[in-house]
Length: 186
Length: 242
Ligand SMILES: [Fe+3]
View (cartoon, protein in one colour):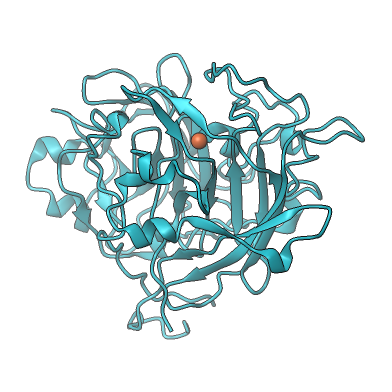
């Protein structure tokens, strides 16, 4: 027996009510704790890093209603090895400038795949959630199959977070236009 | 060890394209490049899981989960239930479903929603649950109202509930919407109509389920969701999957 996949529909402008209710103003919902606020349990080993960025539309305006989810390996390259939802986080971008901030640990490479954080982007106007990846400019990229398959250097650079001061990286997401981020059919 | 076979690819004939001119918000938010194909690695085959410890006892009851003690949300009381399956008709057990919706008047509890319908002080508009060991879920809520939205014309959303579905792997992540059988706005809505296949739209449309309707209390609606299934080929070096 087989069934047909359900179709996606946009998360709409109010996705934060359902997924990050305390950000949406429902302060006491679920005890005031939004799932995915912390990506790993405290004390998980690894180098602490902070990734910040903004989401932009095709005219370069910030997207103010996006929700981002992140999924990554730990500092040993293992997925899902640090508690049931360890390695997963979710962020509402801020309503002023479409900014996000993720405090995490640097993931390790897994097999041929260079160190990266997976990102899933939903918002009003996005009919099917968009998958991309954050690689790191100062980590070896070796034979990573995704990066190797992108021939255009400016396209490839859309997946690479730039080091910015101490433990910081900047990774912006451009949904459309000249700086369009590479998105993947996962 | 859990199942580690790759997932089937997305069936793009059933999914909405990124650029859908009649849904105006997609015009500046649709990537213009083709999506890059990707082999599934360990990170696509795994994903976060959530246990009963994160779910409160009233999280799946939107009629009371934001209400003052003893109070209830205003509106037609309904129960929505269904089966979370994959394409191989296997149940997807113990995964998180989240829902959000407008209140009975069609108004969201959100500072950007300026529709004139009043907020209901006893209705928050979100809920969540885990599927059970056989992939079933249910929750209680009030039937949401249709609402107007800015899309360049006289556009009204059919009554709908937004669903966020986790699966057993990152590749199965899905957000969609549930509509109600018989709603005359379904064929008129540019967001619904981003889906080209009318049968795929029908599968997002919940059916009145009199068999589970409780007399003098609430009506039931049935809504099944199908996530991508796993292929029949296993990873060569990890044969413990099934
Ligand atoms: Fe909506």
